Image 1 (tube, rainbow, N blue to C red):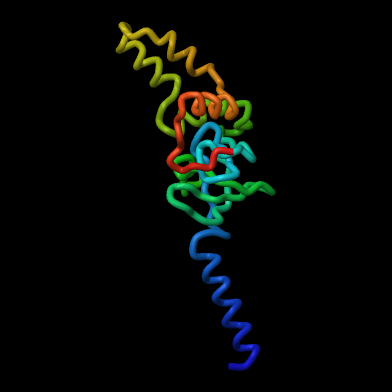
Image 2 (image 1 turned 180 degrees about the vertical axis):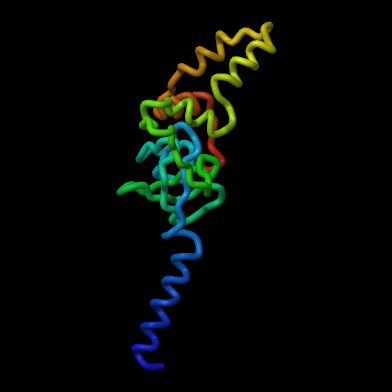
Length: 162
């Protein structure tokens, strides 16, 4: 086989392999805040934060983790945080950022909104939501989470702490 045919064959194979799952595949973040991590683990260092609706380029998959690129950042994100559907944020003629909070958008994307919550609370008046409201306001840094897990000697089955 001459060199030009070999080169054409190699280029064709490269394109075929790169398009098998990755390169041109885009997915959307379907959670309020997604994290790209250095390793395919919930304990991996966060290298970038993603917002609901952000698009990422899929590079490859490993178990239930997807290596993805967002802008100049590359990292791992759990498949449950992504959807193949493109999330289009529109609010009529208003700017989406001023029309609804990211919390509202994430919940509405899952079929839950303020009206549904209000109706649920009205039908369940005997339930005290005080602690739920408090928990929703809590934030735990990755450093605090790792310290908590280490203190309790909890190990991730995926490994890859820092």
